[in-house]
Image: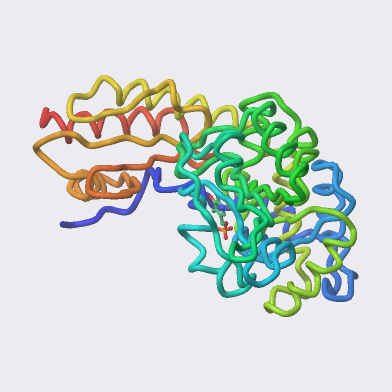
Length: 349
Ligand SMILES: *Cc1c(COP(=O)(O)O)cnc(C)c1O
């Protein structure tokens, strides 16, 4: 099938392009050698994020995946076990990195919308037994990606982290979309950050930057993280040129996430009226929509191909499951057109 250029890209919030104003901030950034702690823009970004999350220190890294992998590698000793929800990014999209770099196992918990409860954590905890791996770390995803952008409520997170810490487990937060959770819930990043030992924020998702993630924790943790960053080849030179995009994003692209959430809810309600789709708009808390294609006329792949020919891109998860993500490069007109196109494609009218 002929593919038109993508005009409305709902595949992921990673598809955002830096705006002209962001690029201007990047070009004008003050630069130095990051490896020697001499890049002033990177240092400013790290200070900003550490402060935002209520942590002693932060470290700029090329990607969110590297933030997760470095944290897991520091927290775990070989043979240790990480407890995470079964849909977690660290289980499904990091090429088994926990096994390769941390030499750790991950025990998946079957939660609800990517979240789990204290009794489930308790059930997943290993007994102190000579034959069992050692439960070392609990990892939570804020928001849960494959859970449909669901937000860990502060109280639930407090309960998880309280239980974990009482049992000598550490708690890590994959905060790829933490700022979406902050904007949707009104709970501060600091309040979420206070519940966990380590946490990071992705710059290249809804914040609209081209590259990067920032990992935060105690000063001792970040000192070790620097060694891992160097070891993995993640140390940079004049990284201020990309860190400047992050500083720009924290100033200009956070409160506007509300628009993405509104657009996602708007689109979800539109899709709920279309026969052949199954979607619960009440489950849309942030910028991610999960839906099922129940139509007998087409699969999710066929639906995606037909939409692609119209310049609209969606994310196909399985033959029946679709993910749509709103972000700053898709406005209300875009989601309206996407909703209309999906209706036409499914009902043939
Ligand atoms: C995108 C994502 C990551 C990885 O971030 P990259 O910057 O793409 O490496 C990790 N966790 C979650 C939940 C994500 O959505």
